[in-house]
Image (cartoon, rainbow, N blue to C red):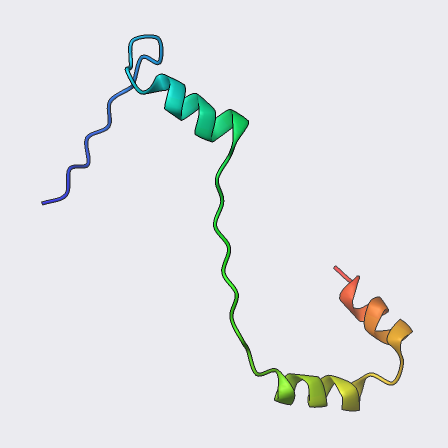
Length: 63
């Protein structure tokens, strides 16, 4: 069973507070992913519908 109880940590007393500070303030970590996506059908559809780059920009900037 998953432990779902959360406890507030006193950073002044926590032994790992320096590591927490380092990885959250000095060197924040992040994740990234790269994937190959086949957009041939989408590209061809847009190419048929949109005749100019300015049309594309106009459509993309609409709310």
